[in-house]
Image (cartoon, rainbow, N blue to C red; front, side, top):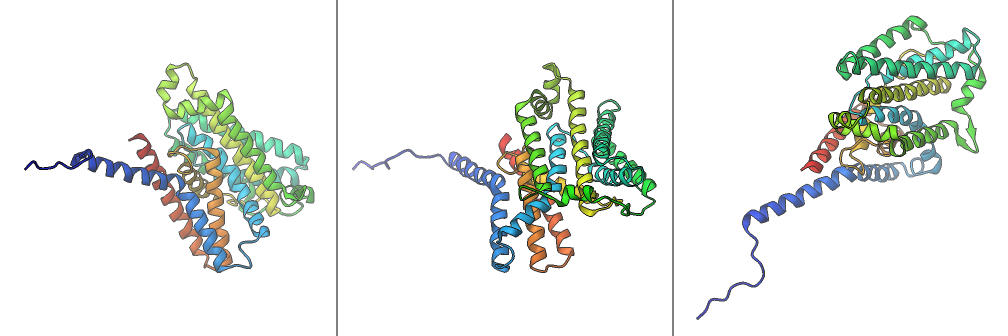
Amino acid sequence: MKRQTPSGPVVPKGDQATSEISRRERLLLLLAKYGTLIGMGIMILVFSIAEPSAFPTFSNFRNIVNQAALAAIISGGLTIALIVGEFDLSIGYHASLAGVLVTGLIVRMGVPILVAIVLVLLLGAFIGLVNGVIITKLRVNAVIGTLGLGTILTGITFAYTAGKPIASGVPTAFTHIALGRSWGVPNNVLIMAIVVAILSVMVSRTDLGQHIQAVGGNQEAARLSGIAVDRVKIAAFMTAGVTAALTGILLASLLGSGTASAADSYLLDAFAATFLGSATLRNGEFHVLGTVIGVLFIAIGFNGLALVGAPTYSQFLFKGAVLIGAVALSTVARRLARS
């Protein structure tokens, strides 16, 4: 009798193993791309169950967005520097300096509010220019160069304030910038929306944005194609400098004073948000929308922990865990996208 052979194609064992690896990689890639959104949904669900009368309310979500506004502004600028392939570790110290300078100009020197703000923003662009020159012309590693400049900025901040807040005599018109509302929306949120929109359009719709992405993707290829790599990097650092200065100005307005080290903590928040955002909806690529999602993720976590009465140290644990997880997700997404 003839032995009947099984119908259908027979998949070799090697191909089966390859197929299983491919499925596993696709699952990991999906987890990396949507893990932030899934985690955000889980947090919202857990905090809503834990504090049903306080957390899942419109006023609380409005507070979360308002609290995230300044972090989104400074993180958006950092995103541009990261897209171009560099780091900027000076942004937190830079924002602190901007806060004491703008209040000092207004209170000590009697400079009109608008003029003081413009001067500090111009200084922010100049500090970004200095960062860019250090990295591109002096060929100093970005981590060392920006951290070194940030330390210098901290020294200038303490020299200017003697370690004491500039609080007396701050006009109400200045504090109204951050504390006021327009059309029922907090001013900080409106400013954040404008900055995020500008950065998004710049990256995706302008020649500079295309050059920034090209340099970040392959610096040598961009140079060979005629792109002025050094100028593009300097422009990215200047963008980060302006957003850092704007964040410092708004924080000083919110606090009603210029305080040394007030914005230093934004450095870690910004890096956690940008790396978390790079793994959101993209394959480990930094992008402004992802950064905003990352900022909201952190803000929701902080808000929920505060409402459930978690001790203060839990916020540091949460922030550190988010940073480690964000870098891990970004690395996995980037590696799987290239495989």
